[in-house]
Image (tube, rainbow, N blue to C red; front, side, top):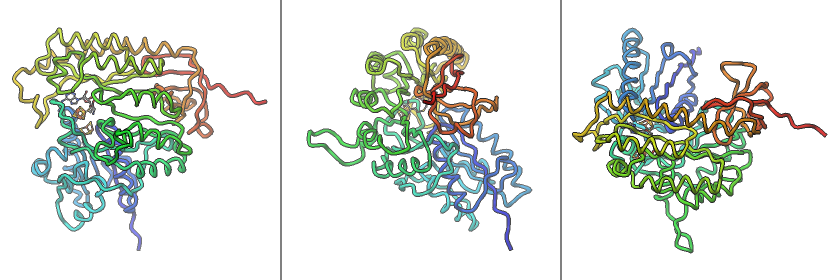
Length: 451
Ligand code: SAH
Ligand code: SF4
Ligand code: F3S
């Protein structure tokens, strides 16, 4: 007698790290014999991989859970899992809030999903939020793309930015060994993947917890060393990395990026604020002058490099004048992309307890003004692509126009052109840019002339 496989659904909130964890957890569910179900209201096992970076991210999951909890009352076979950063932050409190939950598991436990589900099948309600040493991942992720892949290189964060939940929910820094990273990337190359993004919340910290000093007394196993180690892996044509921290970003890294052809000239370096006193209150460990020097140095080596960043407005005590320094930095640097957010007080973070909080109205007013400037600057930055020929790695069809394919330039600009995905998927092609928009481009595929 055969029964239909159980069907699972995973919804992911939050950052690239969470997306990478979701792909690994989906891979575990597949090896357990389950099948993907697109509709979360039809699935037998529903996993929410959650984010708590700001309050609105956290609240989102509660509304989703409400619907599933109701479903469970008439469908006792439904398995409900909350993974990720809200799970870590709330732990057992989540079970009290949503008693229908079967499993609450923090991000460090992602690789243990099978084990934890077996405990659930034995009739237990399980909470897995203890800090653990993350086991080397031997599972096969179910990757969303066949062309580009995430590869974790360091988990956790040892910084203590006063606004941020990440160190609390992701734990201390744990670097994977260069050998494990190499092996994963080699397998990706063999499977036909063309681009890898190396991931860490503070990727410049990579290797600090690994042994090794060179003969000259330099620390070994830095991010720069890792780039050299993995650069020549066959099949992988492009390498990116994120997120960079201005406090630790080195000239040696910039030189390596300029020298290594597969490393794309795209840098994601959040600055958070353009004011030195606000940066100090955030405990970021750099000044806006240092940040500007990093950008200048990148542009000296790679004049066309794309620069993206994150910024927070309305941090406790931020004055209009201090906010203007953030506006000034954005105006001066000219980012290709800037993720902006209004400060959101978070549980167990120092800044949330300060008594100099700004009103929601003030925060959202500043956010609007900053976003307006960001749009203008991005449009300006986009102009440099007009009529140029860009190398684009084709990832998929344009969901809005099936006659077009889409991919990204080396600078990470989304680009569309007419073409057939069955021939072009995973190809690096030359595209002559004919239309520029602030955050995307359209062009014509230049087919090389045959002799
Ligand atoms: N590790 C990265 C970013 C991690 S979180 C870094 O150090 O920059 C992603 C972004 O969310 C941050 O860069 C910050 O801009 C934003 N963010 C984090 N905590 C926030 C909070 N409490 N309120 C508003 N935005 C926040
Ligand atoms: Fe959060 Fe700061 Fe760590 Fe980034 S570096 S994850 S902002 S604590
Ligand atoms: Fe969110 Fe956790 Fe990432 S809080 S931004 S999913 S590390």
